[in-house]
Image (cartoon, rainbow over the protein chains, first blue to last red):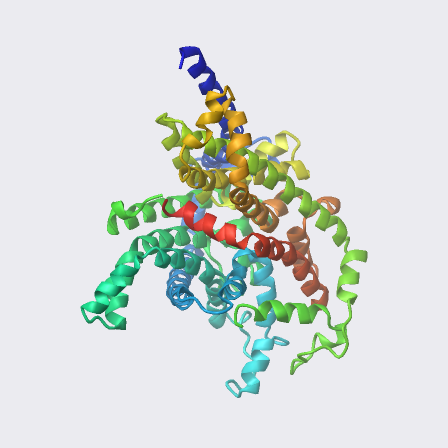
Length: 297
Length: 257
């Protein structure tokens, strides 16, 4: 190929890449930098065009708030419990779906569909199911004499956090199941046959063949999910908006409340930067803990 | 059963007469089916308008981002430049950025350009997200085909762009469908940017309308349930049609070759 032709090829490549690059730079990366700047400014809806630098004061205000530790603890529970049960139940679901049976395709569709739904709408519809006065869950529990009087799942601070976590688990199982199922299907059948010849039982096969094989998938998916769930205020927003009395308030919900109700964009950006920093630290720690080489894109 | 129940229950609530919604013990099946909830949505609440708005801000970004992602993914898998790895990492990083984290800077930027409270502003943001994720999916798809596929067309004097359209795209239609549906679902479900950007009644999308219902006291739950059903149906349909491609696209795209 002549030099000219290759140059032409390069130019084409650039043109084809350009729209994607421009959009991502302009809409995602540049705002991320600006967000860092805004977090050091006093910027509210009243001085949108005249921001003023105020140093670390936004960060100060957030970190010295006595509520902050409580919100942080809620966030840890929200992420930890959600991801743990999503993983365990998703894994079980994948094992169940691994063996072919009649109608498996349809069944998979029915089980996986929540994954495509709007988190906010899911939150709303579950808030109706869990409603303390007219909710069907209370009705069912009472019919089976499991409880004597209706439980205020969402308005009682003792139960609210676990209720929203339960819904998030329900919502996130399909994603784990899809990922793990794909990994299960890539296990060579010979491995199982070899294990059987060695006299391995069901449990041995699970722990010696299946688990090691899907380990990288689990490592990757857990990291992705932790990041996702941290940044997933949709369900809580549909159900409680962080209430009652902050019982379901997590960092991302708090940030949106600052944006929508206090209109304090500087403070919200500072909280956003804190969330990003936590996630980055977690990712570094997690990857060094689980050995970098298992993580591959 | 556990997976389906919430949806069935919401549908049943949406077709109940208002008097049977607030009862305890709960009335499981409505004594008669009524579409009053839906009628209220579309006559008083202007839901038709919101639905059209939602379609606009989902279909256009989904189409644009599919095109952009296909082109970018093609170049990134076919070029040997060192930059491609860096670009892919950036795109992966962008995926992890939640919408609400960058929505404030976006808001201040866009308000200077007069793009707030306009569907076009929201569309630009959705297109960017769809493109970043779509590009990652597209590279995973394209990596699996040998480059010999288009070589013949290139030797015949086609430009890489023509080779992509004539040779690669026809084979990859299902994969492109997966990218499209993924971008559609994400745009349709997005709420926080939309609530911040779109505040006038004529500009609202379906999630924004649901959000405003919650703030308004006195919305009956049969109306609310009807609104939820309307909000969920499009993505359920998309999922039903594209399920197979989405699942294979997801597992291929996010994990390994």
